[in-house]
Length: 54
Image (cartoon, rainbow, N blue to C red; front, side, top):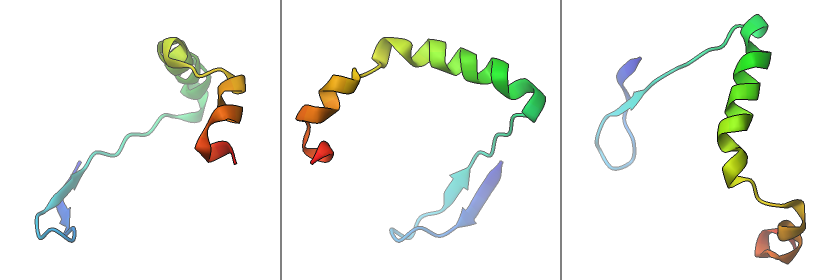
């Protein structure tokens, strides 16, 4: 945890949490994240109709 380590433009202080996952644990962590995010997936066909896809 980095506490009050930088000064953002608004004059306040910024804290940052830093996380790491060892390479040998990454496949399991990735699968878990993909499973948790699956309900929020946007179909590939949707991007064709958005402003960002132009």
